[in-house]
Amino acid sequence: MSAYLDSVPFSGIIRIRDMMYTVDRPFRLDQGDVSFDAPDSVKDALIKGVHENRTHYVQTTGIPPLLDLLTKKLRDKNRIPVGSADEVMVTSGGIHGLFSLCHGLLEPGDEVLVPNPEWPPAQGSVACARAVPVGYPLHESLGWRPDVDEMRRLVTDKTKAIYVNSPSNPTGGVLTRKDLEAIAALAQEKNLWVISDEAYEDVVFEGEQISIASLPGMYERTIPLYTFSKTYAITGLRLGYIAVQDPTIRERVRKMLFYTVSNTSSLIQYGGVGGLLGSQAVIGDFCTELRARRELFYAGVRDAASHVFSGEPPAGAFYAFLKIDPSWRSPLPDAPASRSWAMTEFLIKKGRIGCVPGVDFGPAGEDHVRFCFARDRAELSGALEQMRAILK
Image 1 (cartoon, rainbow, N blue to C red):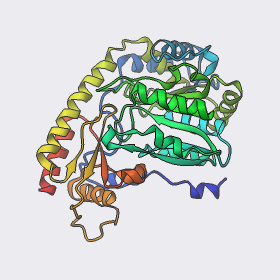
Image 2 (tube, rainbow, N blue to C red):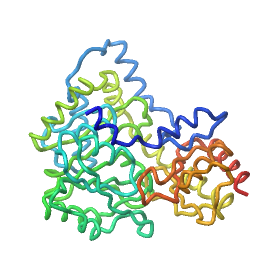
Image 3 (cartoon, rainbow, N blue to C red):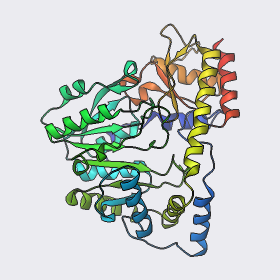
């Protein structure tokens, strides 16, 4: 395995983070992290857990109070017909859940249709399981949604699963019910699994959030993936969860959870209980503020750099995936050949503005850059002023 991992690429986001730590007074629009504080319900539960000495081993798949609450949430909010809490498993963040389910689901050589562009760990987790990610295009002209007929033409006798991510990172595209029904029909026709990444389920500005696992006959072939990170602004606490109906796959994933973390942090799980039991109004408040920041950022880009960047505000998530004008050339003498990397390095070195090159999310992302507009308004405004200065 150690030699095999040499062929699994690191996300360019890691390289960007390293670059940003060398920048004085940076604008951290590169990392997908909100500036909000965690709700008091989460923080109070964490503190209570410390005082109650909740610091010992717990069940590998999650503590019962959390599993019961998650089962109810999946049934009531996501409309997924989860049979019992035994089908739900708690993970150390969304990426751990994805890594574990890929190892429990995929065999070496299996092909998985993955959006292009897409969050790099999607392809990386598939590759770590010795399966093969096969990109299906997301089209900007369709609001960064796929053409399901194109997806169909990519299916071979090696295809095992389809990965869907709605709202999307990095594009912010939100799949419609019609999209999901067409993907569900394809999965049922070809006997495919679906991995449904719904990390941004609570950040939807236009359209509606629908879990493909809620459609008739789909939960039995779908593994939905969620995280507390974005919903409750606790990216650093690492708490996620998945639901798996199939008992064979579930047992394999349970082994992966045990052999990777033994159990997700006990304290973090009690924090999750606090979040679910507390007022959920904070979720709507976060989304309202993110909408305002989206408008602030896009208005600023139009004012400061419309001659260089273009793109429509996203329907969901909190990223601006902007296209670089093809006539733009970096003034840096050592600029990379990739336009998206050239722009990223230019913005960091000359403007202290963090961003991520679009090509890091897949070939279809070339000539784009991703900015996170979930930072506070002062940081967004500062980045926009710098953008105006260096791109004028």
